[in-house]
Length: 306
Ligand SMILES: [Zn+2]
Image (cartoon, rainbow, N blue to C red; front, side, top):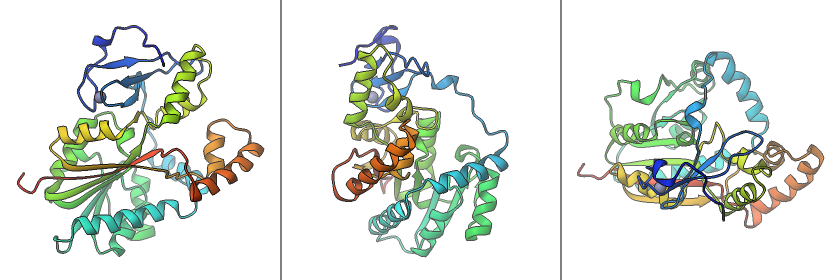
């Protein structure tokens, strides 16, 4: 397995998920200079130098509209919508005793998920950091979002459901975000989140990186990066949410690929021709067989007596 490097273990803790001091740092990628931290207690993996990351939100209007179009083109047709439908169905079951349920989506993007949630009978709200997305949400779906970080907003209402699609892996202040979600829920309410998962394949890739002195890095570079700097396991997710007071934490690994496989493979550096053929085989495998379950689907409840 991979060998830890200096500094010694005791200087690297505590783990941001479980609080353990058993955090080790792996060899850096020669290509990116980035290295990965892993928690031996809960299996959380994270980008060690994340604090050096410079955020690029200077032009939120232009930036999101531009990225959004590219993102839509590479998206797997209907994959997100299917996951949204399933999740809303499960949330409705979890909240069956709650009449007229309300739902708050953190980082709501262009509001398409909230529009669907409204069709499922939820009263919907959400926030977003990009002013451009807020405009899109209003014009495309008639969904009104609040501009700003969750912690900075003066939200007095409590919600039956709080949802986060791929938000957790982007934020620096994980504890603050989970605390804010807990506060936003009414007692007995349910948190749902989807976040990238550390898989066996990632473990093998990290071993290869170590064994080659940081030369074979493509998968690790792609998987632990600026936009996904923490990859969770079931154990790390349960530890994180229980530490914040949640109960009934269910973290289920899913093979959910929001990009078309060919786009995903190309993002790993595979040439276009090969990525097209391999991607088609992978799309079939995702429908019919076992592929790495790269995300966690997580449900957790705020205790009714809290
Ligand atoms: Zn841990």
